[in-house]
Length: 317
Ligand SMILES: Cc1ncc(COP(=O)(O)O)c(C=O)c1O
Image (tube, rainbow, N blue to C red):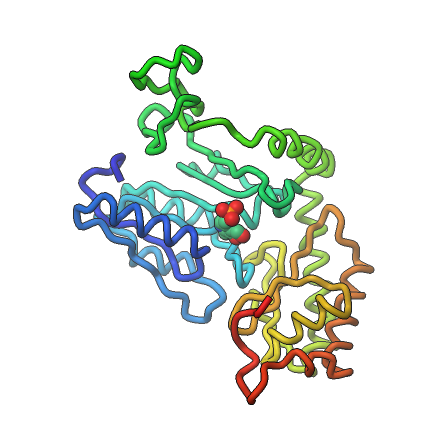
């Protein structure tokens, strides 16, 4: 907001990850000068078309912050188009790449993106607790300040002087000691992604998802599973979400009895992540067969909540 001092609004949507929205709302609150978070609602709970931002973004907008790929539905925003809309109004953009990095090529330079963040423990193979990353467009690096200033971001890191002179370039955004072991473990994971190549990974990711959606149509839709991701691969990331009235208990049965670990997201969403580096087409066929089995054999029944309470809701584990 300090980079756009005469503007008071941050624009996002209601499909963004809760942490993103919480931290944006908190930042607006801390600034305490009438700053606010404006949330563009999704009409179908799956995506928000780029055109909706034409209306929402204006001369009051300092920042547009969105998840490139939406964590629940797998909807993929048109990063270049939304960035263009934001820039036309003079706003900056911040993209959360957690669900797209490592699964597809992302050309931040071509789209002239200002800022991006993401986690490395999904398609970049970092494992739980792996470090996050920050991208700041080169010409912005000297204009922006790190609100969490720390010794590692100082110009002379090791003189431990009490004055704070930020380092040149991206290093000023460091704060303190990073988790060194986790960082070291990133290297082989990144090497694998680089060796496979992002174009090839995207190609396989789309093929896996299209295969899964074809199996959903023939075998799973008749069993009450609903597709809760975009049908068009151009609008999708690398995961496919299925809804079911018994989504919660299906999820528990799959984990406990059938060795499948989808994510469950309330109220009814089973999220199937297809990591193209190591998920095979045989895995996807087996997954569809177990999603079918859990319903046909009624395996989810014993995980249902007592007293006729709705099966849709947060997991109890
Ligand atoms: C889109 C998105 N952003 C941010 C996060 C939060 O990551 P972390 O828990 O590493 O802060 C997640 C976690 O899944 C996510 O899906």
